[in-house]
Amino acid sequence: MIFLRLFWEFFKTGLFATGGGMATVPFLFDMCARTGWFTAQELADMIAVSESTPGPIGINMATYVGFSTAGIPGGIVATLGLMAPALIITLMVARFLARFNDSPVVKTVFRYLRPAVIGLILFAFWQLVPYTFVGSEGKVLVLPVVAFAVLLFCILRWKKVHPIVWIALSAVFGILCL
Amino acid sequence: MSEEKPVKKTSLASLFLAFAKIGVMTFGGGYAMLPMLEREVVDNHGWTTSEQMMDYYAVGQCTPGVIAVNVSTFVGFNERGVIGAIAAMLGVVFPSLVIIMSLASVLMVFRENVYVARAFAGIRIAVCALILSAVIKLAKKAISNIPTAVIAVLAFLLQVFLGISPVIIVLTTAAGGIAVYFIKKGKKPEEGGEEEK
Image (tube, rainbow over all chains, first blue to last red; front, side, top):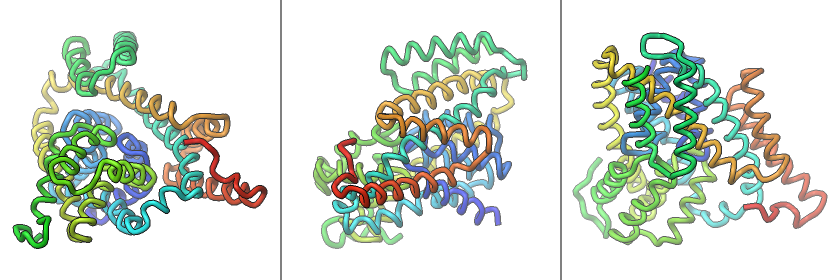
């Protein structure tokens, strides 16, 4: 039963998450709130692991969530669920690729869909922020976190660095200060 | 899967392996995968051309789901039909399945370790920064005028205050987009798709 639900939840995510990478994250927060399969804090950790391991982020996330919810079969079922809509839709579109791409309806829809996705991802960020102020022993640490976040953000806006470097830097900061 | 059969030109095994290689060698999805995909699919195997690849990407962004899956499906389908699409797609996900599950089981054991806990407390800050930077990057491309800005803010506020699910928001926005297209078309033909990218 859990497998059917996992497949269905990730099928929905795969169907509605457009825009790649982080687009799956809002749907996972939604899933977290509705199913209780994992906490928002665990989700944050999963995002970090998915970002710093090879493979597309969406797929990594599905594997991780599925695995932590229902073991190896869970990981496989969730990942297949996430991919199924893309597979089906791509196979349907493959025949009239160019026409689909240039269709003015499709263009209009995506012109409005993209900003909506931004709002969705922003909400995921919003939900995650409170968890960043909690240190390893449950202490609330606002000042060092804000200071580090601002520093990190400034450095990274100024110089383009791979996300793994961000994650490694903040892991070191965590071990030393949190 | 019955691999190992080099029927026609491309075997299912080589589709699977090529995409598994791409899965192993790229960190992060979306555009991060493009150079690897080009090298493997265009240069090494000649399954498609660079221009075709850009088309696949464009469609990948205009259809739901993970872009890597879209591209692998196209390439696999062109080479060997539906079964080829499935072989290529399984190739993309295979490394993720193996790597993530092994890592996750290790992490489950060490979760209580104080240094691991501290490291993850720090990493959460980076994850926040990553998500925010994804928002900024997307906003630069997608928010170009007042209506698009309003949609983004509205999508955010509807979730914060009314707890509306992302599925509903995506569906409503898509329906709205279709409605706007037909209203504009009804008023003035030729005005449907503006110059906006």
